Length: 548
Image (tube, rainbow, N blue to C red; front, side):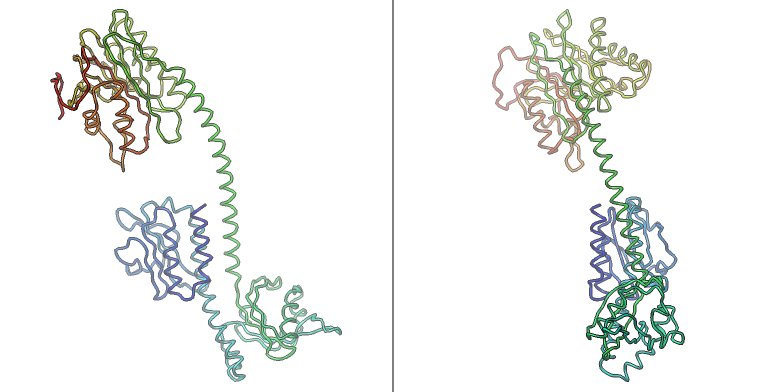
């Protein structure tokens, strides 16, 4: 609606411009309001204007768009060209061109653009008629001889009448005295049948406002300019009437029927757009209500599914969640940490490929399955394999990426398996690396796919970092933070779980400004026997693939 409003305002400005050069420049500039428009041009009988990106004027291509209608023509590999004729039924003045690489975004405006082009043609003809009228009026007033010559040859309709009044001097009719050939052509009336006759005899349905306006001119000597409709002729006219001598009036007629038709079509088009806009607003309100209801349910589910981090002797744990800034449904990021009866710890982080109630419910399905299966056999690869079979059997339509860790707090020995999830990082003071693990397909995607586990060892003072892709895919001007940027953030942080998760959250927000996806970060550390404050110096040599 904003684009339509701007185009309508531009269209209404056209009649106020003085000359054709101003018209073509203003019209070309106004067309750039259209979405996905890279260039706009107007060419009218020697007057041309270009706006936007053009290698050369489109009217120099040799065709001048003479056979173009409301259709798109491929211009090059990246853009298409739309040519709209600036024409009335009797004359073609030129063309409007619109260049775009996304013509479908402009197609809804084609009816209005056609009216815009037709309106421009009518304005050109009206201005031409107006110039003739103004010149004619001055000549008529200056000289009777010039008036007589003009009467015979002017292109505007011209006629002379005398007013007829009742006994009280009130105008009741008028009589035809003279009319030029142009007047005959505009009205369909013939001088030989009308001269000397009363208007009501010629035009039985003559509206009272014609007589009232002409009487004011003939009896009071007032010049008047007005627009009226004639039911008998079924035409709209713009009329200039003045008094050459008492009791008589001369009229200069311009047929504006086509302009009025376009104005009516434009008004109907605008009203239709307004109706559609109101319907879309009603639908948007209903969708917003539905969204809010689903969001509340999903949020309630997610809050009820939150698991507190356990206190595990020999480990430090920290977790943080950051929702996306956009007004979308609750996402499917999740985590879980629990201790097995033998003292080992299971850590899980994952991301459902979807949002809303289904995603929130599926997170708990995966967590519950992992908890149950780990009690039977805690190997991460076997747990993921069985969980995948469960999701495939239940025919879930959403897939899940996950990273599953089995860790012995006493020895630091562990196993890690992945189901299509970003790799885990491990960090000590000033050194950051990743735990390499064989790739496994997302859970629920394919049946009977094997998963593999990788062994690793977490030394005292090292931190294992699990995260969802909302962290590594934080964007700035389309550029991802990525794993390299993530390692740079970790390298500057003290290797303590709470410091790590909060520092990464703040770093991602500082990089992207706003987050387009939810993120969760889980950090696990084996603390040093006696923790020393971090002073920025690297004193350890962790057994990992290092990236300095």
